[in-house]
Amino acid sequence: MNWINRFLLANWSHIFDALLLTMALLYGIQIGESRVQKAWDIEKQKIGLAQTRQEQYVADVRLSQSQITQEISNEYKKSSKLLADSQPDTRFGGMCNGAATSGRDLPLVPETSARAAPARSDSLPASPGDAGSVSCEQLSKDAAQTTLMLVEIQRWVEAMQTSYRVGQAPE
Image 1 (spheres, rainbow, N blue to C red):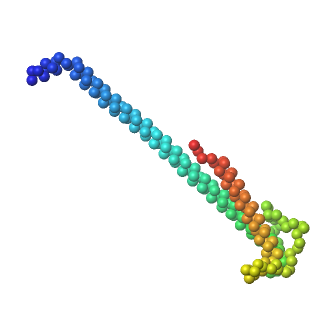
Image 2 (tube, helix red, strand yellow):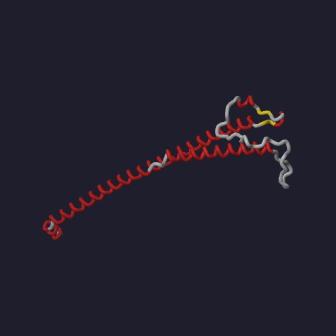
């Protein structure tokens, strides 16, 4: 045991230096680890916040598009009803249902051209595969209904494009 005491007394400064360096190393590792963990937590929070913003944006866009679709659908139904009410009712001698429209014009639905021939009383022959017949009045109604559908689809597309441009995704 004597040689251990002599060794310790002769090299006490080196042993003390090694002990101090080991303590500094362990303290540095602990501080570095806590800083890395803190930076990692901050980064995770940023990613979570960005993900939450993106999810909210998607929900807002879906809600906006749903509202636009519902508005266009309601306007289409209203215009379709006005169109149907303004068409001649062949059951009552070709008279228009004037009470339902009450003098209101149908916006965005073109009128029949003045050059168009008046509705014929005879029916157009149907295709050989079709057992029924199609009248000029029915073709006129179908054309007006199709025009109304196309106009409403165009309005819907424009509204969707506008809502997309206004609410571009956050970065």
